[in-house]
Length: 383
Image (cartoon, rainbow, N blue to C red):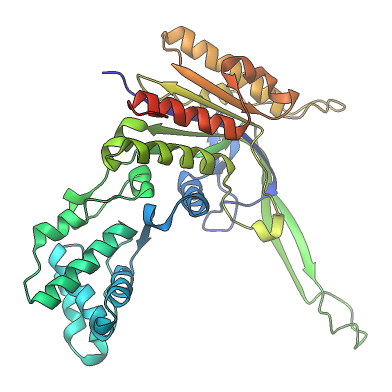
């Protein structure tokens, strides 16, 4: 059976920055091709994409990942039925306990005192529920309270397993206590790697005490260091449109999710140390390839790193990276006899022109629209 898989390949130059750091505060790195590379974790960029969704999607299409799930559902109970505001936390605990989403012993603690009854139950791990699922559970709690009926576990779990949000369908969900409610992710995001070798650097800074001048004092009021690097990154993500459609259950919603993801993934940036470095750049090139067999990560183009230029050569890293990506794409597809069904390219200037022959060249809005139309056609719905 023919599949619909979208591979997104991006070349993205980032100036001095520390957008994703490790436990010591250093920019994350990895060894690839025998040299140290700058790295941005997949989790970091997925978080940036989820935040970017808030600019383009309605709140009802999104979800929330939190331990404070009792607080979230209690707030919805209070909004839906203000008369139950004083009991909202207890009702939220009851519905979460009955559904199995929160362990019984955690919810039971809330009934020990009046003060405890007014506090909100928390899950033992980050729980990802769509806003519609939260509201459905809140309504179930209200209905049971008003009618005086016992909460039905199977019905509650059904409510938690329908009306999935776009971000849950994209990135998946694991509920340790109720594995039947797990959702397989339609999107996989690779760790971004620099196409060249990288050495982290240190910025030694001082901060002046504004009042020292009045007292004719000298010296800094504060000194410190911040570690950083700069890199041209290869970024990659793959989206299984068929799995996304299966989870969302609607072709129009699937198309909207695909276009929202493309826009968000291309233009988002993790927020680490943004105030310090103002490193908000846009990608140099974007290539989207539609496949009907399996996804293909093209990071192998950079296993041999782009080398530092000789003194006087000002061509930088981007042009060679684009050429290497273009050559490797052609070689892989010809060698394995697995060409893309369709492809689109957005690139900035002549440095990345080597990618132009690999797909229909469009500005980003046109690329997003064209991919959306193709997805709609393959799902059998009008564009």
